[in-house]
Image 1 (cartoon, helix red, strand yellow):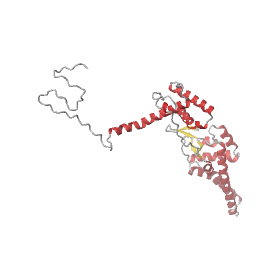
Image 2 (tube, helix red, strand yellow):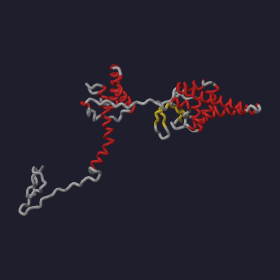
Image 3 (cartoon, one colour):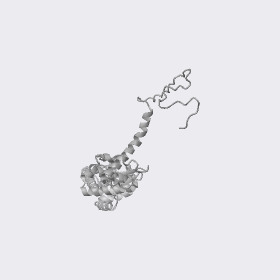
Image 4 (cartoon, helix red, strand yellow):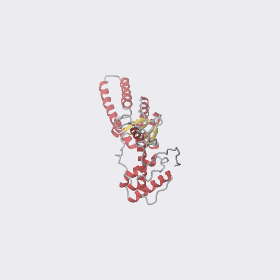
Length: 303
């Protein structure tokens, strides 16, 4: 996976195409293009039988520039980087920032492809692709493009197993702000695949991840807690915090609104019993029975 940063400071995770898939796509494109060129050459030879040698040579050069060179450029421009071979192999040509290519990118790639693909029989392109960290040939370097894989196998999103009940809520005071995203991703991948690992390998991996997580949080691994259960409990705590942040404001807003979406009903003030003549110290009706009324003298004992 290769990280590319766009002009909007968005990090794109793209997987550059390797040399075997690119070579297969080029072979498919060359077979189609050269088959069309041979058929066109035969048709032109038959049609220009009555012309002189100079006209036949001019038409031959024009047909070579039009079909083996011009057709791939036009196809990549119109399809935004997907020729027939790349479509069959699940590849696409994109810019360095991850955007679709335009005519100038396809023109530079096609012009350089004549030298590094046709004249050198692909030797220059193979050497450049092996040397480049992203597998780019010379035409990609000059055009500022990159061939990436579109059909990437994705995970089915298996859920993280829940922690043991006796660990739920135990790490509610843990500071998780210093844990990086790549460590969270590694922990999640381990928890979703720990049933497929060997017992010894799974134990060492869980121990290493638990030590890294404890070093990031500043709290050591509790004694007697298995590393895998500790990782599951901390991930569960993070998910619970994310849920509270996401739905806490909505729950608070729903509490201030009535049950059907209207305003909350106003609280009725306590109804006081009117004073009775001859009883100046009458206690209100809603006053609790265990709270005594203040004495008539006006002196209130200290609480």
